[in-house]
Length: 295
Ligand code: GDP
Image (cartoon, rainbow, N blue to C red):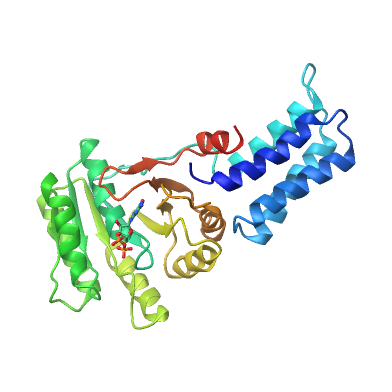
């Protein structure tokens, strides 16, 4: 499963607590240190780990368990609650409040962005929405054909022009095209590479200003670890990030980087990619995720 090693380490920390005959301050500090170590070795951002574990430690040392609940049980509940609240309490889907709802996806090439756009389109289609895709990636002409190939079997249309060099123009025209067609959801896929990072970020800014999306979705490769923090920060500078899709969580990735991306952007993870096929997309459920992690 995802986060295997992180899950195991967190489990070991909690087992240490469960096995102890008495729970004193020294033990609480030791368990908190174990949790800290588990998160740090999974590439979760250092500052975040310290914030989180400080909160756990403070509550574990100060709170009195309610009647009938042992100190151990209460501390385990605190760890559970703090991890869940860190990831976002509720699983929040992307809402289609307005028609059309315009979504813009951003992310580095190789993150799984194109695949995720196709998966999202299919997800909305399965939920009864009519979807249009716009490919504004002018750096990789293959992106348009890749996207078309992925969604054509499902009758989902892709707007794009592999010859066009102006990404902002493409994005705008694509949105106008699908507005006229009366679709419910328009997903605009952007480039994941540029001559230099500054150019990519500037392009995101311009596209975002031009199409005014309801939500910008950052696609992050779940296997990249600590780099996720800076990558997410860079995109956040271009445009406010509304949600995150973490890809490739079907492998052995610990996924700690994904947690860092949440901190960097302040945006929740809404979906996880669990395979290369179009249906391999799952809504992210923080409670289930933490239960599985600690369970
Ligand atoms: P882009 O450059 O960001 O658009 O990335 P692509 O969508 O082309 O994906 C890069 C590679 O990652 C492709 O081989 C995809 O099949 C693969 N990929 C994307 N998402 C997932 C996922 O959730 N799990 C796995 N195992 N592979 C994925």
